Image (tube, rainbow, N blue to C red; front, side):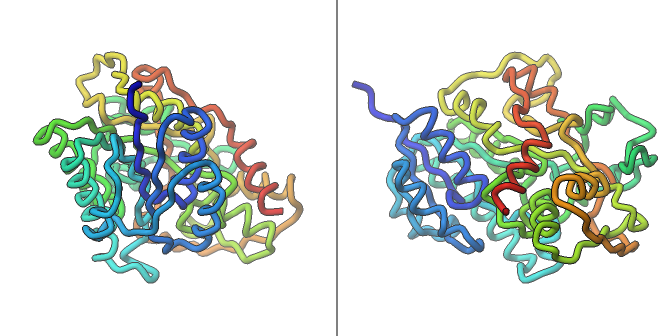
Length: 353
């Protein structure tokens, strides 16, 4: 009898990590899942017992600590969900610039060393914020139904009505957070070449759903809905305080089908575009995109009236329109998002009620 596949999930008790642990266990109970988490995030310990009941071996430890990693059992795959997730990390709040690089880049290198030692494959949960800020900040946009929409597209640059695709530039500036994740991507690809283990890099837009605690660093959708329910003050920040800035939204459980194929060693279809097939956008796309003003409208209709202030000055790294084109994921992996944005928002609302 063949030995069971062994999967190590870092950041396993965060929203994304815990969701994917549950999905993997539900779809493939034969996979042995070990979860690693340092429990720095508020509420993360609440996921320990539910995951253990599903058979996930949850361990406390830090990806930056070699001793913690040496104590882990060998795995066949690592799914790296541990990160400082905020685009403002390192420039505001309690997280220092060094902490961002230490956690997101050095932590990734520690995990790649683990993969080298055990011959494990590596799946990196990456982000839309690896794409360059300057051309996105300079987008010519118009407001349609309370939401920004680009007025010109550059298909040669990887910018179309469907969103930002994998051809779009990744040169700095991209924020300390974005650069830390882009560096992690590059180092992962180098380790794959040098030491002969498989690597997949999955770039996601905003991930949202029940299980988030409504902090700003977890993404705007959960933060906005939970704040509206709680009657906490909200403001449209930047872009003249109109709330027209747009993001797309994806539920992390929608990633499970492609993750299972990656774990099984499946190869994607030939894209014929000359780009690295190991790097791919997985996102809600244009169909699952919404502005803050539209989100406020949704909250008013589903929850009741609220009040939103305005702070006209735009913060560093804020952008008017960030929508990932996931069309290449459809061509390579026959993948598309399964959960509509209304269903994601309702899930957050119900869980917070």
